Image (cartoon, rainbow over all chains, first blue to last red; front, top):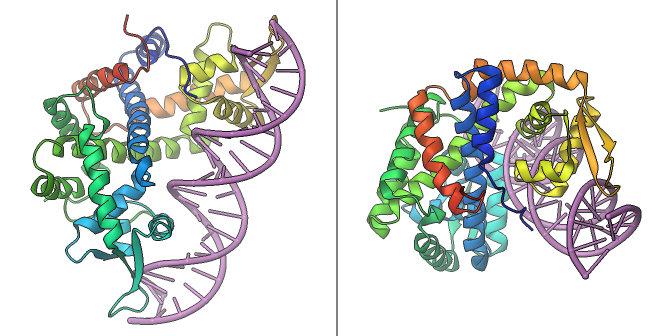
Length: 170
Length: 170
DNA sequence: GAAGATTGATGAATCAATCTTT
DNA sequence: AAAGATTGATTCATCAATCTTC
């Protein structure tokens, strides 16, 4: 299913060629971006594999955990979109997926009849517990990185997220 | 189009809750994975925006550059899949996209009649030059990260890619 | 039989347009 | 008019099955 491994690091090789064509300045950015893209693929594949027994994808898992960790076990769809940083349509699709599996259910918003709430079900809570256990067991697919490595990456990328307007720096 | 910014870092907030539920061990992995996923989204959006004038998406740009940098300006589709780490079907789609835009063309393989070559066109070479200039100008969307930051991220993620079997360490 | 590539179908994500409620 | 959510259409990526050639 997956292609055979190469005998060299394709990103390192690309960096070498890049430098000879366009100089030093843009080589590090190119290599970093390519690394992040590829790492995202690897992590997503590992996570989705670990979540398969629970009939979840990672995006659906994220939505489920947002409900799980919310105070009342329920949130307005719009709020979920803001927290997950996805478009309204995607929230609709995510909740559809969770609802079909019996992990969440839509409810009417008590005061605003335009809005819809998504609420986690008891079954959803069980699944969330088990799925989280599974992901924690594999450290979210981050092997072989150390905690120090991970904290450094998180910190570095945080400054990029701030710059991108992901959230307002306190 | 994009949701309004939050007043706090959603990943930091998730990490806080995570720690109180599942302890320290899995908090750093969770936060790092979420950071990488979100950063990938941000970068992809920045790159696609910069590439829009050239009618390219980032995946198509990557495929085009692979041809651009190849010795003869042409490669077998299978080899492209191995280098880009994507499935054969995706290579077909990518080359379809480049071919429709006149940036590449399919050619018969000289010796193996099963195989197909993709060759960059003169027009494709012009576009590749211009698009690369555009991406270099914005440092591949990596603002505000320093070269030191970028090299550190690339190096750290490289060990993960090796572990994942992306390539064989020499 | 296996490799290389394509086709058709499925699942996920975004965009534009629509509908209801505020 | 604006906010919240949904629908339908488009794009993209992957999977299974197919076809040709080695």
